[in-house]
Length: 192
Image (cartoon, rainbow, N blue to C red; front, side, top):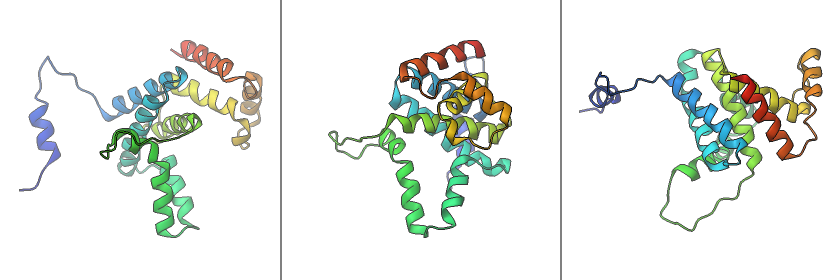
């Protein structure tokens, strides 16, 4: 007999007042918003796990929504000039921190060195992917995206001139991490 996840979900999730009901939109939104807050608190590992989990779900959902996500875009662009085996290796490398954080291999002393900047990029792309799939963003996502663009203005040269000026006016591209994080926390507080 073939395993059917929908049957299992129905058995484990009977209707009733003691249950909460959540959609994939609500789950991914909660994961991303939590990842933003954890990142700003320098809790890089849980932020990476939550943002990556949301990205993985959104990547799967985008097929049904006929939308593309940043991960799918990257893979498609790389496939134009990379052989399949190199592309698979590159995509696995990009997913390495998330897989390291969620799987064990029996060696408790194995270590992973990774850059916290990868977490920031992952959280940002999770917000972009959420918008690609659901055509909306939570206020925290809007604030984080604006903050990210202001931190990395050179990565967004094709934005309209008014948006580029707004990003420049935020004046955080050269700020210290502590100042930039404080600025984003203020933005998040105002976004609610």
